[in-house]
Length: 243
Image 1 (cartoon, rainbow, N blue to C red):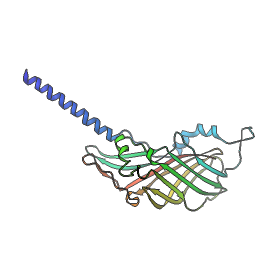
Image 2: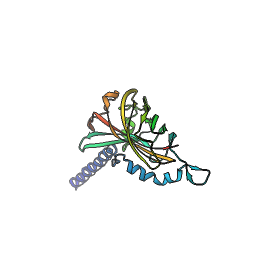
Image 3: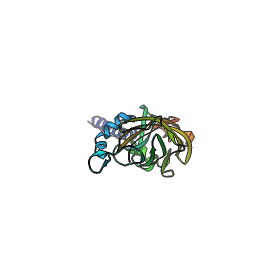
Image 4: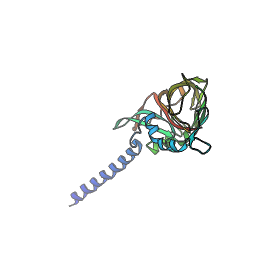
């Protein structure tokens, strides 16, 4: 009887330890990885909003002609700046980690076929990942968002498109500018895709690579948990701009 009770106690202890360790592990590992941004998905997700925000003239419902003017990033669902990076977790293997912040501001000016003055600023203190433990770690390690709370892309020279965009047009181009992350500024060329309408522009920055070392970012490895982290992160963004 005593031996049977001992086995039950040991078995119960093993189960409890397994649940605790497994729970902590899943807490770090997190959930499913969001898909990479795409213009088609972004447009589909905001199509109903776009229809309701088109600029009208004289209350008649006629769409205002032309797209010239200053376009400003608006906040809300479907607007974010983020990163992707591969890491290796103990006992699991590779994982693609995604972090995104909805705290985005910015603007650009469109004059005929010229895009100028593009500025996008992201509040990195609002970054969220699929693990609260990982998110909290980024405050003092890696991106160190407590010390470097913002990331900024600033266009450094006007971009002339081949022709002036019209309502309903899709624009795919690349903009030269400066990216500031972790207190370091580097020259970059950022890919940009946009679907334009009179009242709402859906803009995505498809994934583009950034080397951590170029911005002085140390890898936040965790002994026994996070075994390795890639040298290159991927930045991406999904924005909505109103005129």
